[in-house]
Length: 134
Image (cartoon, rainbow, N blue to C red; front, side, top):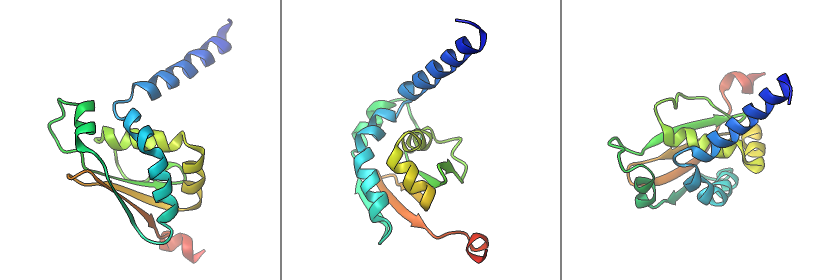
C-alpha cells in the first residue's frame, strides 16, 4: 500500500479497535434495542428502564465513583460535557454507530440519564427557544 491508502487503512483499523475496546460498549450494545424503543416511545412521555448494576460493576471493578451520568444528544452529538464520564461516552459511541438512533437523534433532541440505582431514563427534549422562533 502507498501513502494515503495506508493511512486510511490505519485510521479505519484504529476506529474499529477503539469502538471494540471501549469499556461499556458490550453492555450498551446489549441494551441497544431497548434504548431505541425508549427513544421512539419518548415522543409520548419520558421512559425508564432498570439496568443490572452488577453488569456495569463487572466491566470496571476498579471504578470508585458512581455510574450515574447525563447525556444530552442532538444531531448525533453530545450537547453537554461528558468528558469525565466513560460510561456516557460509550453510550454516545453506540448510538452514533446505530442507524436507527442516528435517524432519531437527527429529528429530535434526547436526554439519557442513569441514576445511582442504574435506572436509565430517556426523555425527548423540546427544541431550544431560539430554533423554535425561526
